[in-house]
Image 1 (tube, rainbow over the protein chains, first blue to last red):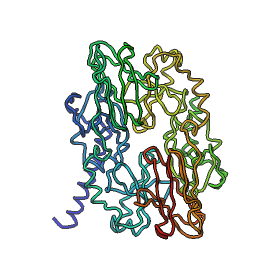
Image 2 (cartoon, helix red, strand yellow):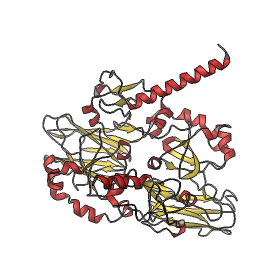
Image 3 (cartoon, chains in turn yellow, cyan):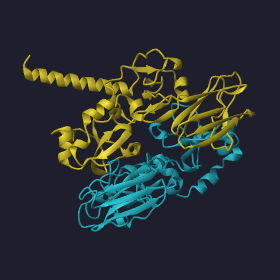
Length: 271
Length: 261
């Protein structure tokens, strides 16, 4: 095979692979994988339901995180091979936590209504690049081919950081290496669990730090639900086995009760 | 009705024949704006930022048509930073996501309240309640906060919710921005104090390029040419005392302090 032919076939293969993977993202494969039970999901799994093809990241906090589009997905994963299928009924039980942002270091991003180009670092923090020379120092001569347009509606998923005024302030390879996975990138950790039974809450007083999720699980046969004493939040009615998670983002003392038995009380202290 | 929908759709995707153009400096909070190359419409808020309508359905919970949209140049649009996404106007519609059967009522300040039963949905929106439900794409669901579920109809009044939501910026609780002025003799005020959740606009009123860069580069404006500005939100997690300086000078010769309370 001549060199040209090798190149041509390599390109053809690449195109075919790209076509196949993008097809996979939008259409239902002929053969559905077997369904994974919720109890067998692990933090960091990629999941999807049966009817819709959207793929989510199953976070350490028990929430699912949305990939706003294929481009964001492919900064983290090469293909869809490891996606686990869960039943639609089970997918509805996993609440949406937020959107996945670009993996740090992989691409630069911009929006079409602003010429500024940004690098991405952990936690979706973006930094405007001070000059073309810096962009070229960071991403090489082809830097302008490594910029993705992010649609306006997803731009608020990013946090504006300081500008990169000298190339040494940002190292794409190191950023990429540090972003081990989405849990690390988003700094997600396991939810604190409060079980609800007929005799009350498993942790009547729970102390957590700001930005922790609490998962209320009804372990009883009868219906229960946690409701804030001031009515500002609540789990709704939880039937046997149901769960509801809520993030506590502000410090304070949160008093609540069982809406089906007001004598059962609990307090969450957020420090 | 069908024709009307089609026409509005066209208006959203096609360029109207004539456009009245205004300058970025003439914008007033509450204006609807768009550039010339792209047809996306934004809400201009009093923090000096533009807010994105994620889709047409969201737009039409606030506005019947596009007749009030002001055109600005693409260069001017680029100077108006994006602040966030607009959410559904409270009370107008019920929303859900396709991957969950839960139907939510939209309440003040972008809060969602799960409607506990079909009966309750009927009491709020009538027999045809299910025609009032919009599917919100998963990727915009996290623009909302899920709060207490609705158990009794008396705790939610769609019309009152709509009436109370008189503007996008009121729903988002957006306050006017606070300016930090850069002058030829340094930062105009040595110390600026703001409440948290305030947008701070650094404006270069000097005759040369300048920056306001946090001491350890935690945040910064990047290079601001004369006349340019950059806005940054200081939220709860940014409370405290920040020192910044002009990278075109030095920490010793041009510094300022921002206190976020």
